[in-house]
Image (cartoon, rainbow, N blue to C red):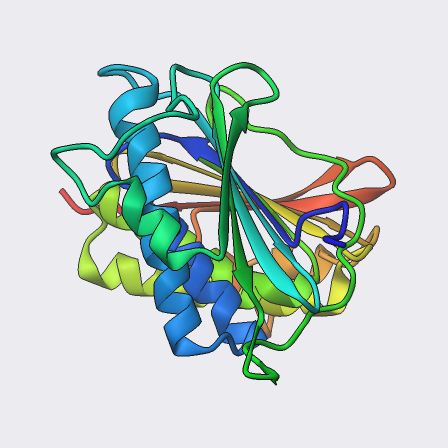
Length: 277
């Protein structure tokens, strides 16, 4: 059976960059789990079409919340895409202006349509994780409990990952997509790579449990990230002053870096601003 908690929980608004964000998440997961390239292509195409249907149909001309869940076990990989809007009813036929639901049905081993938890529509897609007896990915450890952050008004993305090692492949891709939409210059865009790599390496050492969460938001030439939870006191060295003999890369590369309490642990909050005129 599929584990109760998702390997990845991704909550975001259905905006034009949605497909790039979701495909980036899948690529980041594939990097750690060594997903077979053909399976990854099928995943990206089918899930992109399900997400595109939300963008085009669920909320009219306005963005609205969208939830993507990825579950992985020994036998299958399941992705669900859910909206709170009109969505697609179970008897939907192929759209005339897009790839269409027939492609989802052709690429996934099983597809189901259901009413979402808060109205709208949930699309469930199952993909076999073995072909001719050969595994198509490295099954991760059982996902830790998914208790924590939800999408708030100022957030563009909230992602929850278990195991924590998935953050290495996922966080940078999500942050760079948002930095691009926030019109970062090339030099500042490159700094985002270093910032997210530093945070992911810290998470591998200092996460307080089996799951890690991240919030991402942007303004014009501004990127804001909050990541955690970490063990209490584990993030202090990342906030060392600039005149320290060995200052933290985060202090040198970001405009703001702070540690904030989060339940029994702490979270790391950073802001990167592109100050070009």
